Structures are given as structure tokens and as C-alpha cells.
Image 1 (tube, rainbow, N blue to C red):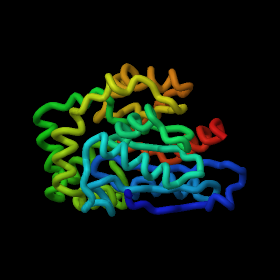
Image 2: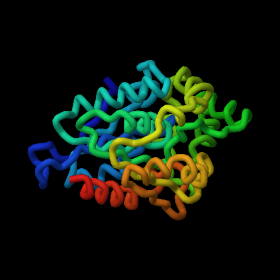
Image 3: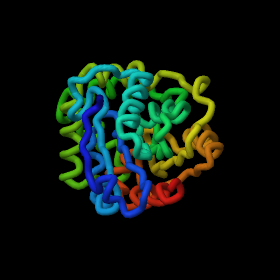
Image 4: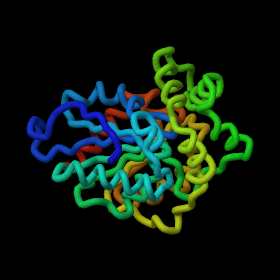
Length: 259
């Protein structure tokens, strides 16, 4: 099972009976630490689980990098948290796998929040950008360039250090697998609906995955599930780092809708 950290209230301490658990999953090259700002804003009122995907963070030695393998591990963790109802918040790389999970959800999955998700059809990445992506974890200089590209504005030294350190401790195999295969996997013909309510959260200045692409590909599935899109101004791809206040508010409001 994916390693995870637990924060906030225990189920028995929840202020409202049946309050869902937030399961937080990170972007390509990240770890559970990208959610620290969100966790600090929600942990007094909610139970939160932040996990590391195979090849990253505390799961750097874990293998299995395909979208189907990621989705299977997410389902395993959601089911492990039963009988608690779970809201899955998944960012970028893990967002693609979360969409696969939303198409065939475990019984205790209450809803999904997609944060700048990698599109189901694959990412339109140039060969040059893909070559840079697959080796971004091989030096401090490359890791910093890769990380800075995800921010709309220069991050604080503290946030930059956390993000860069996470990239550098990631598995080479995981970096190669996502750059070469994961971003190319096309699930658009297999995932035709989300069977739980889903919301989409996108940074207006996201240069990694164009908001217009999200509107064309992901938003129709989101709206068909009863959800909506939130476009965050002055924010790029690394939403949990750049906009923890806005993201926390959206997640909390989403939880209130689902209870």
C-alpha cells in the first residue's frame, strides 16, 4: 500500500457525523509535502491523509508507474479507509489516475477534486520538453528549473527547497516512466463518465497543462457528474503550493456539498 501521513481529527472526533476524510495525492516529482499548506488550514476541522505515489517521496523504492497501477493503488488506499467516506484530491499526475478511479469508484469514495489534472488523452509535450522532464531529477540545476516552471511567481526559498528536494529524491525509473509512457497513455475512450461528483481546480496561468485543454477535455465529464470548474487567478500549475487558502476553501465547500 502507498505510504501516507495522517493529520487532523480522528473519525470519532469529527464535528459532524459522517464527515469525509480527505485523501491528498501529489504531482509528478512531488510528495505529500506539497499539501502542507492546505493541511495546516484544514486539520483542526477535518481528517486528512496525504500519501506518496510509487517512485516519489517516501515511496521512492516502490514500483508500478502506469496509470492503471496508480489507479489500483489509489483504490486500495480508499478501501483501506472504509467505512469512512473519502474525498480524493489529486494533483496533476495523480489526477489522471484519479479520473480512472472516478469511473469505477470504490463504494466509500464520496467525491473527487481534480487539481490541474494530467488529461486523459495524454499531454501535448514537445520532444525537447519531454527530454528535459525525464532527467529533471538528476541535478540541482535541472530540478530547480523544473520546479520554478510550475509557479506563476517566484516561490519563497522554503517552498522552493521542499519542492526541489522532492524532485531530487524521486526514482529515476519513475521519472522515465511518466515522461515516456504515463503522459502518453490515452484513457479518453475508456473513461467516459465520472460516477461520483467531481470538481476541477485549475490555475489560470498554468503553462504545463493549458486551462483551455482542461475546459475541452476534463470539464465536460466534471459537469456531467454534477460538479464545476474553479479557475484560480494569478496561479500556475503548482496550486497546492501557490494557493493553499483558495484550495482549502474549495475543498471544504465541496465536502459540505457531499455530506
